[in-house]
Structure formats: structure tokens, C-alpha cells
Image (cartoon, rainbow, N blue to C red; front, side):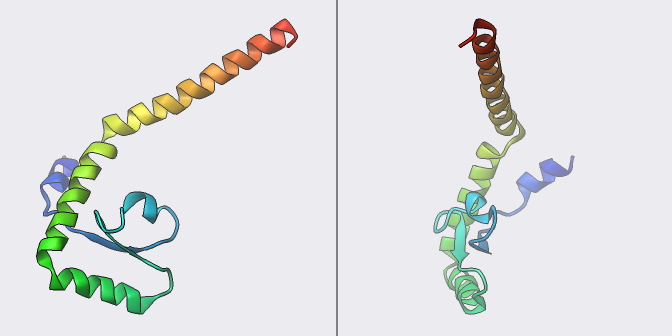
Length: 103
């Protein structure tokens, strides 16, 4: 039941660096702010910018929560995984048929 409580948590914007998978999760200017890696001044400035504009932070937090509920909900992730496996299965089946027919 922990997940249910997560959705009821106050939506917060995210401030992060443009490294690894973070840019895939945080949409810069929409669900949070992204800064260059190894730039503590930019990180501090982004945090202060959101603290100075609570309405902007609230909008970003709500957008992030909505995106998380939609794009990263278990059903969405399941469909994405099934799509990948379905594509792989179709390719494998097609390659097997090609090999069987000598193509």
C-alpha cells in the first residue's frame, strides 16, 4: 500500500543534473529544472529560482506527478515491455522463417 500513499504526497518539482537517465525522467522547465553536471552554482540557482517562485514550482510538481501517474504507472510500463518483447518475438519469428526458407 505504500504506492497509494506516494500518489497522495504533495507534488514537488525536481531539480537535477543532466546525467544518466535523469533527463528522461525530468522534463526541463516542465516537471523540474535540469542543470549541467558538476555545476553547484547552477544547481543552487535552480533551487533558489523555484523557492522564489512557488507557483512555478507547484505547476512543475503537478505536471511531474501527472506524468508519473500516466507514463510510469505499472500498466504503462507493462504495455511498453510487452511491446518490446512483441517486436523482438516478431523479428525472431521472421528470421526463423527466413532461415527455414533459405532466404
